Length: 341
Image (cartoon, rainbow, N blue to C red; front, side, top):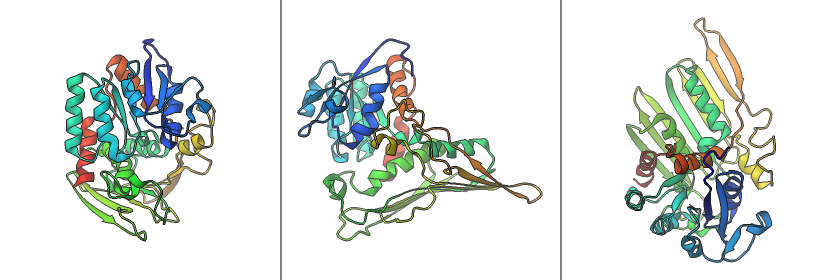
């Protein structure tokens, strides 16, 4: 990415746990239009091991009160997103908010109005739009090779049969449970391609022993022309099924969840590594088509490298040149309407 305007925006992270270390700091540090100035670390101090020049504040209030910080990343627990977004906006900051943006559409609309009143921007961290596997799916859809789409199924499965240590995910707080954890990823991908559904039907499950929150969900979304889209997630899938299954009048496309960015970043890989974001060999999606003579063909569809840096560049282009950010308020309101009902 090139900083063509020479404007640099100072950024601050509200936490430096897994999300701050993996999903935000490397990209803010890499983009020439941002300066990662400070991180809030209440107890364990780790950021300066990775970024010696970044300040480590003891409390998030120091991030809010730092007049030099332009952009605050809201990467705190889900139930605090609304509160911390509101505080940051009231302190005159632009905000980048992890999913879910808020627990309800009412909270979202209140924050939108506040941002407009103080002249600041809200950005939604829906990084899975920039996954290699999802972009392979989009490429196939946009090619038209499948003909009329009939059925689309997106899955995001894990196997965690015990109650996790993160209280905000496992206790019945605002925006807790699997629906609010992985639902925003799946729904945003669907909405980005197909828009707002005509109707939807949602099923939740509570399957782990002693669970207090949902650990399974399936949402069926109906679209025009009899297109049926389903998103599913479970915490009790030991042998994951294909993450993307598409059936159309001319064929099918099957793709595993294969984006490598998270694992690579966790392993310490740097963004300038030529292997970054490239799927492992053998991870290609399978496109099966049938021609007018009834002959079936099978083709491996390789993915382009995934990279989350374009998300941060989209933020930069909005702040520096007022270019539209691809994840819109309307997208988020559609998502939240489905999540909260």
